[in-house]
Length: 282
Image (tube, rainbow, N blue to C red; front, side, top):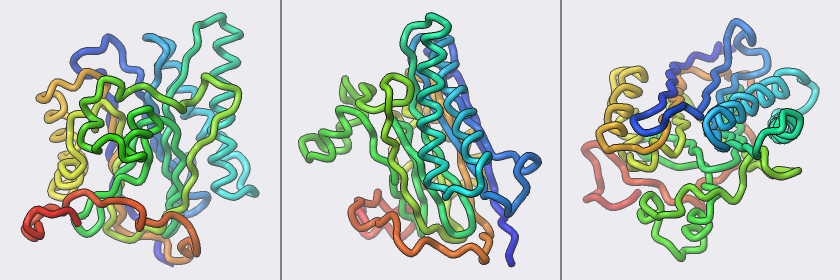
């Protein structure tokens, strides 16, 4: 059995405009959850609801999700992720009512790695990118009005970043009684790069730029610094958060999913490197 080995780096920063950081990230602690037991969970959340309330919502959401995933190993990973998102939703709503706070909510996006299987749980407009063979894929859908327009082919994808309703969510955690997360199982391979980020970053950095910078950086800490500097240079008006994960060696004893996520319905973003195929999308 090959022990899993991966490189990871994450950061969350207030940015240059906001007064408080309402983003939150959480990385699986190898001390709390030893390698090879129940897999490794990484999550990112972008809170809303005004200053402290948004920060509270994002932090509570990640805590509830991690507790659910690592609490009951009898349920499947997909079941635990789904329950974790619903627990987060309930906790935020109950806290707001109990403390007489205005409504608050958050995006919630997480990946769980076990062997060659990556489970994805997603609500909102934070994103997950997969970089493989110099091709960048966005494997999440933005749960926004603008995202719906793009999927309906009423708006070009490149227009989404600058649309004046880019951040208007139509699905989030904490504002309605029930929430329906996207849950997917994805087969991953050694050498894959995974990048989770909030919209404060992807709104000012192009998808292919994210993939290229992660691929070309000497290590993921360098990548984090470079992408942060670029987002600040381009005057991002929001908090900035990233988790980057490079898969070096996977546990071969855990089989890949027989069925699950398919890339056939996705448009890969531009290849980077010397072989650009004359600049056409892959």
